Length: 417
Image (cartoon, rainbow, N blue to C red; front, side, top):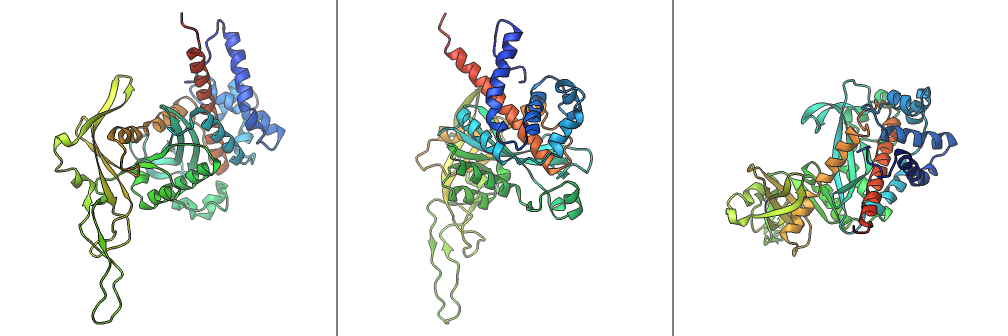
């Protein structure tokens, strides 16, 4: 990915063009730094991330882009207190210009950074997707804006486990700000979505896996923001038939306290049960995009339901809530995955499937930021260092997407031979 540069007759012209593009692109970010020294070291750090080399930790980067200035680069990242909020606003504007719009997706996920020690801020024994099991790692909640399979990450927020959030000594050593309290991943994600909505950046829907989608409060929060969403859920997610009715509780003849819970006309079922008796012809093959080995497709089926996340009813912890699509995906290996979406009732199956599968773009971005830009290469022991490094990595990634887009447009505008 770091090799993406415009095509010219010689390397000098390519490098000159790259530098002009970089200086123009990074100018709005520089205005957000408080001191001239930060304006100097910010571009140097990003050049280190964009440059060649297998390791993008401080020492090897400094050796390549600023020999003899390792301590200065370390100071800029770890001990220099600069707020990331202004830079994040600029990053959002850049991302919106690149991939925003009515057909864009806001993808929520998390990505883990494996660690061997115990001193890196927020490190704990928790699930690590990179390893596919529980391991010692930092977990970052990720928000990515994507359109036409082009992702631009716009937020990376550290999930601070309870054992960190409630330990004053560890917080003090890692310089965790006093106003940072324990929040679940879905709470972190929802707060970021609210921030992005306030920014005015346009997107069509919010996508997330079952780690977020299984949470009723998260789904409700998205609906309260008037957003469309398509999220993964567990096979045991309870839903009611669309036609279910709730009757008001009857008053008791004895004159005692009136019951508070209504009665439902049908019992809820698990998502996997809804589709368990469905005939094979109830599923349709849907192709959502072309992959490197040909078209990507799977079998899908969808039905309108009422999600079991409403107020309590007689005999059940939750009555019917919002009406939604329950979608089942059956993959070639026979594995079934389940999703909920508040897309309108007249939405066709192809649109639902395409939205659900668009979430893959964030995984591509995570992989490239780690393998090419060193997201997981720097040992960040402090809160500020981690979020500085994460932001600078996203800035570097967004610049590369800018170059790719410019080159794509240049090729499109070339006259036919």
